[in-house]
Length: 339
Length: 255
View 1: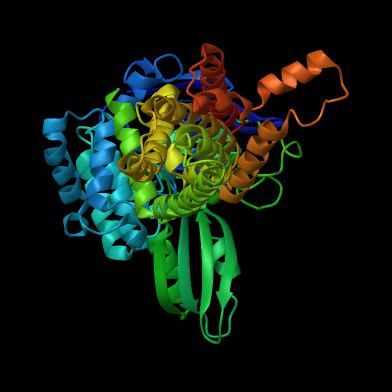
View 2 (view 1 turned 30 degrees about the horizontal axis):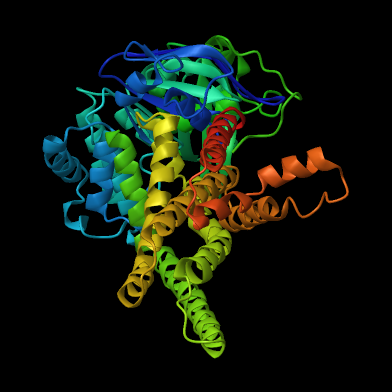
């Protein structure tokens, strides 16, 4: 449904997007993740035809965005970072206008506008001027505008920014509902959002794809070694030597130490589950076992691991380099970010 | 075509929701009225003078009242029309709504024409207000309608040229004030462009005189429709809109 092939965007000497390629299938929700200035917004603007790419092609529903922009735009709904509202229009008039410029036939406009308002829960705001809306409502009117003409493709730049927690949940539910009929790309910096709504994640950094996978796979693949978190009361003794000698333990490191509480991170050899042995050791030594749990790597960890610069951290770089497909980290060339 | 109307309608609505349409209409009517009264006073003085020299005589309303009035109107417009166009692109770029227009299935041509027609519609409304004054002249006197018609045609063409310059300049900036001031300066320059060059040879003089935007208006207020002047204003409008299109294109590439 969406094909991006070797898209590059340069502003003078600065490369905002560098040889980006990915595909999105019909009905899929693709999450677009990356730190600020990674090139998320630029990529979305290229896909919506707002900016031309310096090199490469992009196709929406089979229509090339550079050669047949009007056909491609007809099939795209776009919510930019700041909702593009006219402050002097009422919500109803604004949506009518959007329907009109998107080619919705005059007879159907009322129906389309009503449907979009119901989906985004803004029906009681019809008469309100866009300039007088709260941030959450502005965002929702922006979303209504994007899905109004029932496009095949929805491109949403941080759709939940500025919403309160309840609205965030509603919006996520709405996006998930929309997924069947629409193909969706959404960018966000809120990671749980991606694991909750998206089937696939593209992580980009410095304009390059760092990883493409499902949120679950991404977590699984990055967990090169499993680790456990152990909290205990060692009654004055040092528990580390006893634990390190266990078969299958790779490394034990101290993560916290208070009066009677010691927290440890125990790295295990792949495929080994040593919870029984460890609890046994703790108990036979007469220490108090306070907590023992497997450590799940969150998307935050992955994100940080993939996007932080090499050499500045002690993360297992071997794990992330497996995922680097096209990325050749070129440091020192372009440090600035582009708004 | 439907899209152009939709965009023009949106523009016109924006003018009337913000105070800008009312400010323009009120102050244009006020200034026009002022020159109108001044013109009538002058005419009264003239006819009184002639009364002293052997009987009252009819003063030609077209020659002594309407023609100077149109000339003065052209100058008022030079000051007011930059305020009509200054927000058109600048505001959309600043608030991000340009992103909506450029990602909707609209061509650049439609966007430009929508803005042009919208601004022109408000301008026509401003001119329509002055029909009241002219109507009063018809009530009390017997002016010829021909020169009045051509005068309005000239005003329309000239205003169109002003608006196209304003659009082009507004499309180059995000700042309304910058757009307004720059438009005013450029229009003023086109007014006084033939004031220099007296000593610079006839060819230069002729070229500068041809470029002067108010020079071409005089014939219209006399009642003459000269294709040279019509061509001048139409190409001026075409040039302004062409520059707007180029500026939109450039914006896109430099983003």
